[in-house]
Length: 455
Image (cartoon, rainbow, N blue to C red; front, side, top):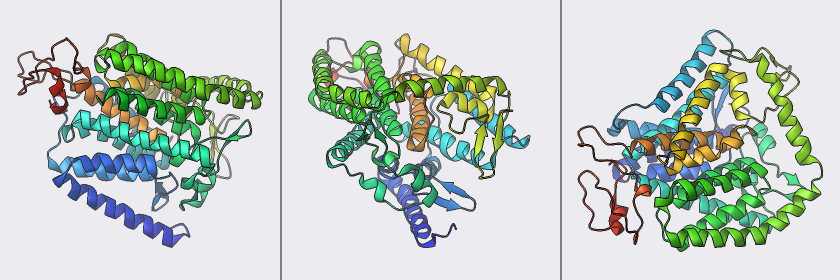
């Protein structure tokens, strides 16, 4: 315990109850696993931790562990076969564990790799075996629409209700205070940082577009997410949201009918006219902040020469207060660089190869919505760190992207017919006939909502 025993015992009790709910709920309704996971990511601040000895497990990691543990005993399996991205994720884990063996990586960092990154990836990878992909997409769309509405309410009321939730003192002190840019409060919801909120909203946009909801509903959801992202005043959040929208329009046209594309163009223009002038004034009032920030990120690249192939960088050292520094830098706002500095160049190579494979799938029109969402985040990976829920969420989306790509492949013994990610089927009213799904025949494209992700 850390001196705040009542709160910690309450958190442990809530965590145990949620874990039990996950196990029992899966027997009756597997979609509760998805709901519990999304609630933990979207509505529980990072400082509501579960302490285990010297370690503090973040709430979204607790939820991921509980949900994954609930999935595995009931027959979930990796569909078809393991893929190259699965092997690359395994490579990241092996490299991390080797770093511990040679004594160049901390127990805390190793635990984060296993309990946060790996578990979230496996949850996204395995969830589609129990919950339809279309249901997963729609769940994400609904959850982040709620997040967007709460963010807009925060902007209007100037009150972040999540910042008042108790938890770990040090984490709450680090993440609960509201950030200011150009004299204006930046919305951050339960995510503890405006960049984390903006990044998560941006990843939700391509998935929302592929959720096959009514056009007016889809447009409304995306417009709310876009407006909330602008009010984070996170430049990288805005850029990655716009990039995700553009990549979806260009490389996933089957998910979008003509009416939806026109409505998206109009609504995006209206949101830009309504919100961007205000955002521009805020950025202008921030002065040289953007220039200084870009220069700082450029200087970080000098640390790459000290990275080892395996383990911590030669430039790393632990200060008397226990914090790790790399050269003269304490904060490393570059997720890919930080991966290399913490775990070595082999880890960076695995991550970069996985991103290249995802980008190739997108530009060759074989990419799914989660893959597009991941590729659109590449500028963020090179300019911000994976912080708070954003870190765990990115790995969940990565696992979901691999699962969705597998869902498009012909299962073994299928005679060459293609398994279908429902986002790739024509929308109602399209003239292109829907491909056959094993065990399912469609009279028309309006029946695509019954397609199971397991196919």
